Image (cartoon, rainbow, N blue to C red; front, side, top):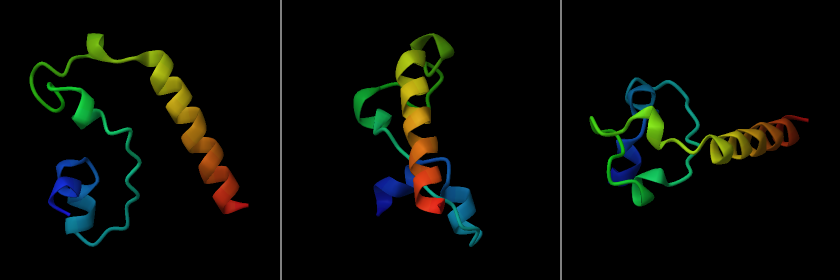
Length: 64
């Protein structure tokens, strides 16, 4: 469970606000995750686009 608390949804969970964690496990692949070296030039926008499309499609499927 401790590893789950490293992500951006943690403050919501701590305040009892429902939040869903969607993750691509980048912290396992990127040594600079959430550091000063975590800059925009390191983003893979093609992957991000595909990941976002899959996430939206999944959410749509789960809510219909």
